[in-house]
Image (cartoon, rainbow, N blue to C red; front, top):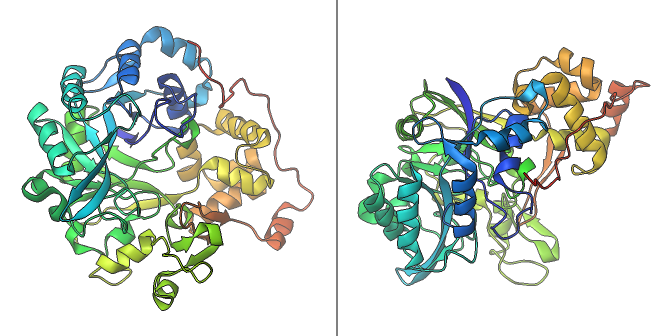
Length: 443
């Protein structure tokens, strides 16, 4: 079975997340996007764990689904064109902050576990180590290697994947507090690490430059802090729908069952290049080196981005691929494409109305972005939209890279292109929609 999965999300119990980030909205938006498997996120938080136990019921082995009563209410907010199966998998991100080799380490890790009983046992062990109630993503003074050991002692089916491995502040290989290799972090338990998450600011091609990652499967996830951010990165599977099959597929990285990833353009990520946001300074690695890593405005140390760090650890030239590489496909979220086409904010009512109108006529977002023919998109959305998606598929867009916590910016059309393509034609026919993506569920 071919399906799309997103393994890194949060709940409304995590800091800096949307109040409507609940299981109901994850279920709804997964269908709008065309995603089959979604992480629960945050299962270590007692409040969220209670919601998981209350609202989810067992489905295929190791997976869960929304209970029928809640699902029926939620389905009323999903167009028939998008309705599909949604399954949840128990995954939680944990922030490890600790001292190792005379340096403070800060890295985030994704923990997968196959059932609620084992999750409860795992949570109980973490509760004795630190405060798991203060944040959906708990901050623990625990060595990442020891976290993995606790997980393996709790469940031989559990597994850990280092999250967004290149981001400067909280990652395995980050410039601020990371390590130079998986082995340096996980020591004797390194053989149990079989995958890493690339993060929004890097893509597989960047990771291919570092040969020490060759034996690891590169996965990509949204790290969603609000429902509509779901699926901005995702994984493509062709395997049985079960926890064990998902684990086996990620571990083996077999190209027949792991079909690749959907990727943010890495330039759009918040930490792609180097810079100092307060001083509006952004540098490519070569410029950073020329300035000795210092901000020319204030003299303080620049935040070294993902590209700089990749180049620092790379032992392959840009463009070279390892033997066992998997495909990836750059995507731009449909709301961002509509934002560029309509020349309004991506969260505006105008964008949301058009977004839902397109889904009602063409089906889920991933289907529109990757599979629908340009002519079909044009017939519903007008010439600019079809051309915008075509340009995305061909990597023919302009990007202003993100730096020091500032997201990058995309530009699809020049003013001349827009005028030539649009002429006097109307952009869209906006049909009314029952769906409100910012609504908080009461059911």
